Image (cartoon, rainbow, N blue to C red; front, side, top):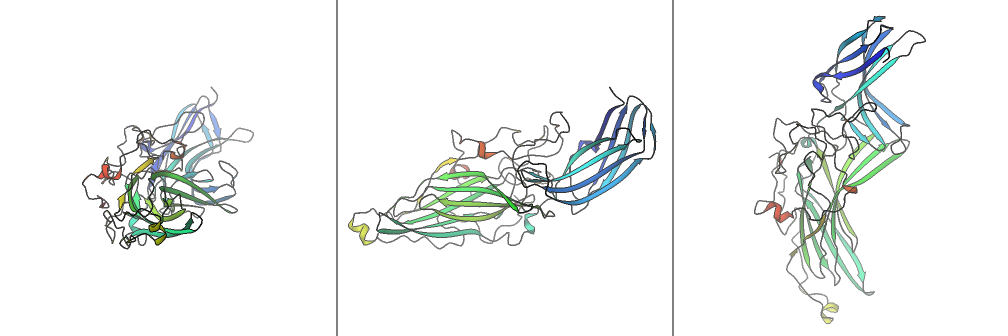
Length: 429
């Protein structure tokens, strides 16, 4: 069995998720099969960020520390055979950033314990990772209440000699969301040409920037939904929704080496036209309505009323081209999001769901969920060869949508989901 049969760090009450400024308590446990002489027993609490030039590489090229505290648990002496427990407590700094893990870098907080033995004897070490959630209050972001709308006009040629244009306007009901909240989007397309345009595609994108020797950008599609095409000389409106999955918070305040951004990109495949709307993912929902309520059918916030030509150009009229002045509503062809089974997001057994089933932000006192990873790669932290260790904290990871096929049956459409209810969303409800 050896002299040291057990050497581990245990955090109080089985917790793994903490807030900045909170005390972190635990104990170092030792079980010995024979007496062990030692010079010192110490415990160290650290927080740091490390970045690499290569994906999933342990050779770090940039690093910054946030805190490092050391406690001496025992001075020089000898531990008799049997079990021993050394309690400790640290005060986490109020500026500690939220934990994060990505392919090119991570923000790690951990407690390490060392037993320094006399010369020519083997020293002993163990560690325990814990997670910090520094909640991002969306209401602290400047202009979070402003309308979120963007528009672009694309001119193009077709049939060699003919020209036309398409106007693409996209908007969302809010600029900031929390995990489990529904992002409602609207796209208005005016096809001022004799050629079909589209289909229209909306993608929720995550961009993680890592500051190594050079900036490294990791961009991935979190969710994607595709609508139908717009016929020639038609104007159309498309409304859809995306359920915000478990994602790391925007920005990661307090860390200068890793930055997280989110965007909603709405585009037409033909002709190629794209608009990009920045969105924020936080932990505390927007608690007031936007300045301009999210529009109902027919008119996005900040957009001009749709204009349809009273008649097609002379060349189209002579060719007998069709003219449909009435707007239509586009259907959805495919949606990348599936409804995962209970627990698929990595929630620990026995922990309440992080959000109510109606998609609204969770009321108090349910704490905000913590997501540390850009992919479902680390369900729970485990040391050594042991399996994952479930915890009693709301620690969840996002599904990896990029590896999923489209479901055989698409999720409910916007109209089906909302029914006759007001499509506007009251933040914080």
